[in-house]
Image (cartoon, rainbow, N blue to C red; front, side, top):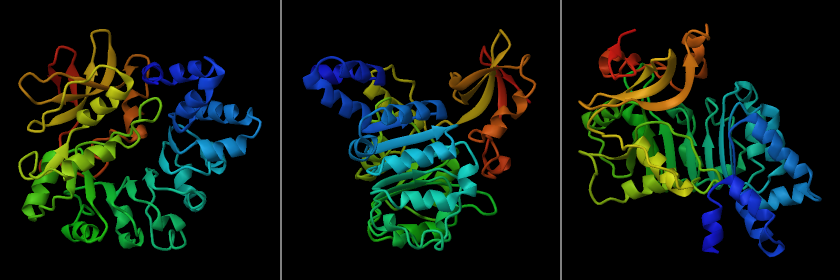
Length: 366
């Protein structure tokens, strides 16, 4: 069976294996469908079409699919149809670009309530309240919860998540509505909580915040950036949590007075599942900032640039041609994920504004 495992590091390999021979079909099919990654609406529609072609699509979807990640431009109606079919999902990552999910939050929460969820990553920008989740059955089943705003926990009693052992939140510091020590202490008071992951672009400011308020709880793990990614076959769907566990279980902090892991540590751990080359590890003692990298051919790439003496651009997103796209300046702001001021962190408090970097490594201020 190890030979088959090596042959199925990608979705294409698993799909090809289904046709190999009858006696191995069920194994390859389980590998292909048990954990599903759907990064856009086109792929999600193709996934639905594959299910519809089966003799008993509802039964297969409910019994076979246990983990699913829905992201990118996936449409609201597509997600609702998938979740209505796949009623056996225990691990769900919902990370859509569409704002339709915010205007239909009650429908989203209602359909989540029909799932036997254990692990939930909910990135829809919705402010949860006790009223919204008052009758949710998953409050008692979820053990791992990731949400995109710390404020989503501000107006709910986190202890209503009875079996919650792992919580990850996006942490805003140095803004009017930023993270408060009292909120942090309230989250840490949950009797079942084993790990609290704080995610933020500015690792240094977050670490200084914890030290300033003398918060040294070993359950706190810092993660320096949001990376919502699985491998092709979803085998890395718990990698983020496994890394957090590793750091929380350390007898001593692994960086100064806190426990943390870098964005590249997560990426490289996921790369191992796909047998692809590692990217250079980030250095936590030196900050990286977002920038536009301008190539000699006029193309512009969104990336990261380290402030180390030998810092090299780290490519993060696709290319844009400044001469062909009049909307270039608005592209990333509309996407939102890389907007430098999206969380209100003050530039004079340690946050770096976006720079432009020549392809040879030089800086051009905007």
